[in-house]
Image (tube, rainbow, N blue to C red; front, side):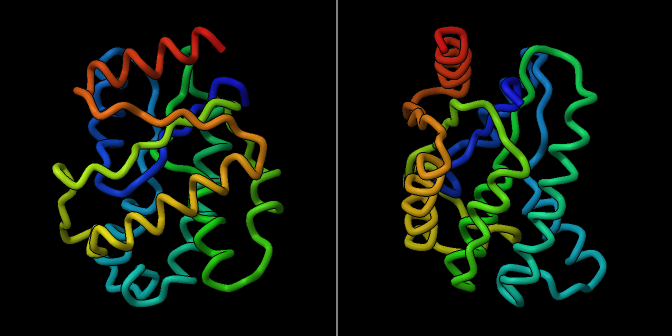
Amino acid sequence: MDNFVVISGCSGGGKSTLLSELHRQGHAIVEEPGRRIVQEEVQAGGHALPWTDMAAFLRRVIARALEDHENASARTGKWVFFDRGLVDAAAALQELTGEPHLARIGRRGRYCRSVFLAPPWPEIYVQDSERRHDMHAALVEYGRLQMAYPALGYEVFVLPKVSALERADFVLDTLSDA
């Protein structure tokens, strides 16, 4: 899907703020599947949480990301921006289990060739009830994503550490040049 654009990268790197700005500008967005799963599991008293059962959590995230991908085809507008996607969860599950999830799942739900990664930004990183991991874990995650996306044929663009409006301009300008 050439108009499905992933915004991924380091946890706490400003992805959600960027996506809010893109949405404010009228673009369609798909919220991060992991955060939605955490909220649902906490509300239901479930166990598919990253701090309880990481494998179950990642499998739920993959299922939700596949649903999001399928449902996004009905969205209108030139671009549909995803707060993370299938590759994020598949790469994490592969690292956790050693099973080859990335290539298999990466073929099922393709996105625009241009992917944007939010780099580590310790000055804005905040833990909360849904993001309990520390900066070290966020850095490990970022390193995994820096390898996973190119391995699947995506071109990675690192987001500059600037305001959300400037980041949105960077993303839209990069996409218009592609």
